[in-house]
Image (cartoon, rainbow, N blue to C red; front, side, top):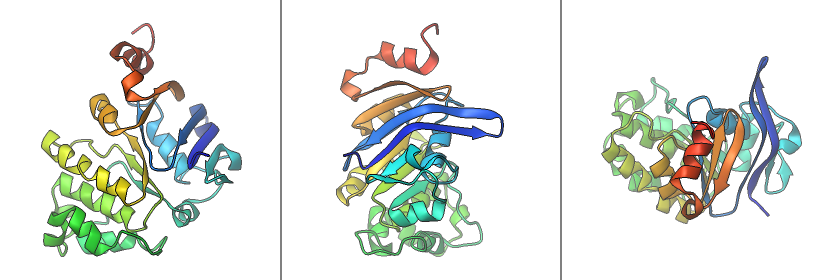
Length: 235
């Protein structure tokens, strides 16, 4: 049984429908990537899973339980944490305070603590007393990932974590993924960089205009198939 899945998931902002019957599945220990152009519905999908956008109960299942109508705090308490697009750190708090906030919604025993987050991203220990938003973009992203890990999630949702970062910084951040998986988390990664998405994932889903247009293992997806799914057959 899938650890996390969506079934016929729809989502709207007022009169605008952003998702149309989206079906995805994440197996235990797996990393899936969600790719697609701007406006394809990737962030809306993540917000729906995270409980920021309410849905029909059976539209999102976690460990077989219908969670689609639950609010975000209940989703976190069950073991799903999100690294949001744009990092969303608290500017009035230090690095360490931003990290500690991640424990409030789900204070359970597990691999991740301040010590293990600092081992994953040593620079954060050096900067732990600094305001979170005073760091470089890459270091802020490390704080955002560390904050999510502090809840010891079973599923980690990563929304556009490479956005606006230099390639060398992106490489350092993705280098942490094997350790995150080894500690027991399954991952859903939203990524505009197709090459990066193929590199880190076990399976890929492509969204276009709110619909899944392609899915499969990276080794099975040709450049032509991806281009067609990403931009449409006539592009």
